[in-house]
Image (cartoon, rainbow, N blue to C red):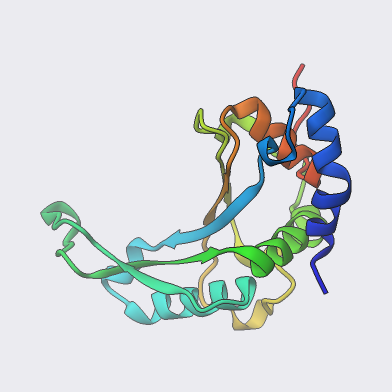
Length: 182
């Protein structure tokens, strides 16, 4: 069975986008290609166990095993050497991507305290959107008692849109709660 957001994309979003942007072909309609979840911990330099705990949390949130990322360059001011583990990331595609997007927009984002919408300043000029989450506790898969350290994460939505307006419209039609611009 396909995810709810994928069905929403096929049945409603494609037709709305074709009408809104006057596409001549269904294949021109932008689509969500992948979602990248990334976290970086400066404390991992001293304590690698915190990093492994963060990687396990991302694995629970995404449903896919997280990859440990390593430093590319040495920085002596931060006591950082090339190749030291620094963060964790997951790249989601297809069914897992749609399932995560559904859980993010319908369960996790409404659990953010004092939420007034996502700021749309995270677009990169090519239709891709990046947002930050301050604490991973908004995801119901994680238990509060099991969290060793509260840390945030970056979530990047990579689309096939050519402009920010198309990318924003795509995510808005899929249910991303952006702030209304004045």
